[in-house]
Image (cartoon, rainbow, N blue to C red; front, side):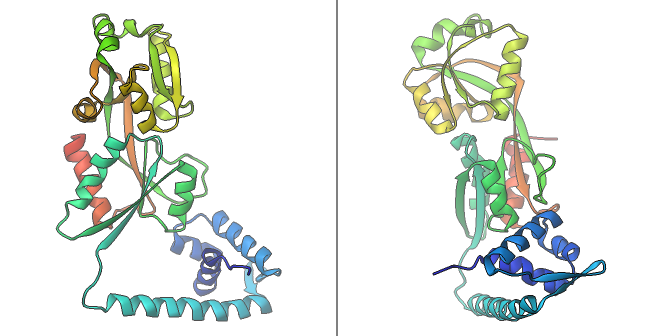
Length: 301
């Protein structure tokens, strides 16, 4: 059985209802090129053109008009279902669908999301961890409310979204006692040729560390590279090298991994962003995350 992509159908339905590709793009908070590409994929799956040019405007073809009639019925039934569900006396909790870029330390993710769970209104948290590009695609299709990342939205992406800075902090270097003790006295130069556990290249933290090392003429011995921060920390806990974490979660790292502090620096900054399709945040749980991060966790002025 060949399945219909309902996201593509929804974009087509919105274009028809709004009257133009541009108006639909505004309604969907997506770039026109993104909507156009999704319409192209729908046409491929249906085996025919949905629109034809009429001067500067697009008009539906016979196939387009027929597909719109079905789409209108499908999404009208969907609205009717949601209205029925929302009309039930025992409504479920508000949902927060959060995407988390996989390089973020799990402890910082917990601290960032915690304020949403402390709201008076009960929140159901749905947390998805993945690569940034995959999460942004889900955000563009409104399958996520927010994406937590260590970098702002890159220029040139077709996703129409906004980067909200949550805060920034320095980093702390950790190691088990037998490694930390001899490295602590002459830090940071003691890191020269010391075994280091690092995030993968092309991450914001790796770039900041490499620039800092180069400026101090420090060349650590890279003992391991990881794209999973939790796995990196496990290797650090077992004594396989020095590792770093944001200074704001220093106490949690010490407690959870039974390691010691080698040193700290403010010269390398970890920055965290909430990426949303909303310029002005309206979702109460996302608003709580921004407020707590800026005025409590990172204490931004």
